[in-house]
Length: 228
Ligand SMILES: [Fe+2]
Image 1: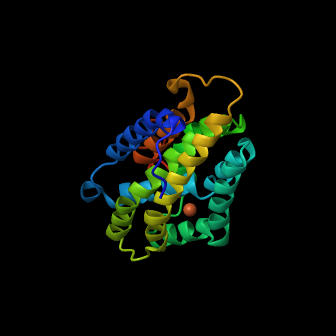
Image 2: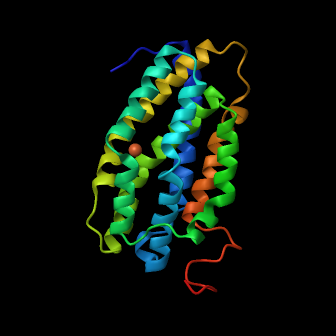
């Protein structure tokens, strides 16, 4: 384990704290699983799946394309290898099917606007900002797993491969992403903008996770006003 505290380390410490606070904030946005109706539980699992299944590897790939240091490339490559080799999207799909929470078109629409905002941000391929966003994403995913597993349990599902795997591996991934970030920040050609600007991707992803927790008003919930 790395124990040295150098200048780069201390410069990312405030950012790590900000991300930690952001993770606590989004976790608190999810209602108590016990108090949710079956349809609300289904909705959360379905919207989570709609956001994660097709986007995680793509956003991690964007981070890979954006970074410049060999260390950051190596760290992200390992992460992507694991995602692809162990078929994480397939694991998540299996989890959603078992919990009877396969995303529908209404679930996709409920996260659509915030998802598009994250995609537009990702398209700019800003290395430091993207690494911060992905560290936040990994950190949140790990801490969200017990809740997601609890929702699935109430849905009558015993399928736990996805939640078991992500409750463990993403702890390491988060730390590794911070290490990649340290290197990228040291290599940055120009002085970095203030933290508020660096956390742009984190803010956009936070908004997206909020729409997983509670579908925005104005989106027709599943089973209302339709015949499907
Ligand atoms: Fe994964």
